[in-house]
Amino acid sequence: MYRLASGFLLLLWSALVCGCGEGQLLISLVLPKDKRLDPTAACVSAEPCGTVDPRLVRFSLRIRDREASSSQEAFFDSPGELLIGRVPTGRPLDLELLGQSASGETLGLGRVFGVEVSAKSETQIAINFRKPMAYISAGDTLLPVDAAAQEPGLALIPEIPLPGLLAAAAAPNGVYLALATAQRVYIYGTSDHERLLDLPLDDAASGPVTCLRFSPNSRYLFICRQGARLSALDLLSREPQVKGSAIPGGPVQDDVFSAERSAYALLRGVRPGQSCQSAPASQLLQLGVRSDAELELGETISLPAPVSDLELDPRSGKLLLAQPCNGTIADLEPPQRGAAIPQALEGVTLEAPYDIAVTRDQVAIFGANSERGAVVIKSQAATQTLDFTVPPSTGGLTNLFF
Image (cartoon, one colour):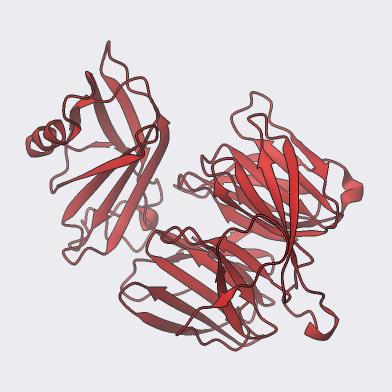
């Protein structure tokens, strides 16, 4: 465990928060056991190598006050102990720590959501700090990719094997991975890729899993089922178990949160490899999510074309839709009722885009056939395309996420 220190940061944050609270926050870093996942180390194996990545030259701490709908950011450049004074107390704060290169590239990240700082004593928080990772589902394997590597590739970090793998997702807080087979769901830790939970799905008659999605606070995992069912898992429950609700008009192909307790489910989606001639136009179903993870069904919105994947662009707040049958990625203001007309994104060219992944400042569009894959990364600065060979042992690539 590392602690990060900077007297400059303490003074800067005190000035920024304007005397809004009396609490103090002490932040420590928990680094991955596998040093290939450790952003502070330049290691080529799982064992400690004693070499620090020379590209990691500064840290950025962002604290978002949910109630005030505001955030602040401060920078520091040396490892040690990070003590922050005069932090707002008795209200939920979201913390994000980024390790950056001199050019601002993110080399390491850690997040903690819903922190409440005490006014009576120093509040200690441990942040799991790891490399920014992309993951690609490939047959019976989840392939981790170091998204910050100077030479990205599919074989730099050991894969996660899971026979019968159907879907996978990463929690927004960066702590958990979820993987699912036909009748079971598994939770892994991102710091070392060790399995933490192994649970059966509810209602075996609902069929296999079609998608996984974490809630924005990373507490709940939502599980799409082929038999028109959406299930949920509370990861903070003392005895976690999967329970769900029937969804009219399913099956559910995907779902995405547009706010903390508001979501859209994608119905009648087109699957990779499915013929577009037989694919019906997709629909969106509005969902409300209660604190106990129970679902409230809302309006159904008609879309003009088959959609294979659904994401939320964090920059614009719009929904992003992969439309492989007409070769476009489109965006859409979160609709309320009736029919919706998405608008195609400009500058994105990919023959059959069927999967989208998003980060704070990038949108990645993924498409693949049996031999070649491509990722188009669109950011505010530029649009770039990464082509790669699909490993022959994977049986095809089906999903990309960060």
